[in-house]
Length: 516
Image (cartoon, rainbow, N blue to C red):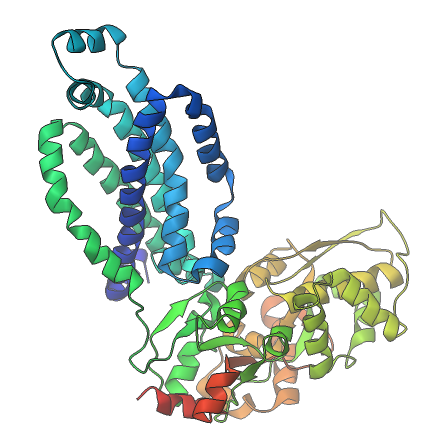
């Protein structure tokens, strides 16, 4: 399927996300213009405040967007409010600076002539300074618009919607069409907004003011679009990360088996548990061994129809490397069968809740097993370990690294936070990394894409499923599965404990009944 076929098939969702993106950009930009232009005029009149005001706006501009969004969530929750505030802060500097510069650039002789003709200071501002400064001011607004269209894609990470949902979903699922569709429409929006502002810049100021009156009536529409919660008709507030929302073994499989039709929001995986703990959402996706389940007193719903296969964790390594260095498999297999579900949950809990470093937790665990040894050799052959972007993977990456450095002559580098499954898998196939921790259910359903007959035969049989992927991967991908570590970190739907008690909600099938 090419890009345009994909966009046509997903036109309804793309239209919705485009409107959301316009709302985020337009809403934040409108507020920024209303504040920054008068403020720019004010500091042009009181130059003693200019450096301080522009300095504060400059500092806000330098804060990384993801960090700013994360900082705002405890105060404003998830969704449009923190996104619009962040975009507003990013738009301030270019508009404020250009307004200040534009007003100061008006020739003093022209202003003196206007005053000499009997104009009041207010008339000089409205009829002389602003019209002459307008090209510079509009240049700042156009810059802020293009910046906000780009930054608004990050709003998808906090449940604010927009075209970022397609971009980040495509990154998680390694779907170039999803990435390109979201990026292309964002680029088109930036061009349209920029040209619209260029047209307005050529419009006389008086006509521009008259035009602004009906245009301002659009603001309440976007306010309703973003500040009225748009959750499912059942009243449940549901959020998934991009990978779970799109993966064949994630929500699509769950929806088909349980007849679910939930209206969900997309959230960055790292924010899901916090959103549930702070009662911003009722239901989230997660992993059964995640330490934050215990930390935030959440309840895992039983997958009573076995939608999710076993996800036994094992090192996945390049076959030629394993064949050339059998000591690698021997070393990593020292941890085989030594980590059960409750142990992995506790290790995750120590990092997520106790704020211990993953490398320290890994070292402590290996010491308990009497497997830890100091780094045997520096400067040996290079080996790179990758990890996906969640706590458990960070711990396992450091555990593998410490075992390898303690028992072999390899010099290990860790690349953490590589995103979703396909990014790690592709990196492994291309030799960018040498091994990472993978899950049998993911390897089976996502990477091998088996037939329905094979799924029915293996979906509930953990050992048989491991044997299947261990046999097929060397033949198909030239990759080798080492022995499983011992725990099954399956996908899970997780709810607030209060909701579980109130609705007597213990199984996913009961959740399906609540949506009606």
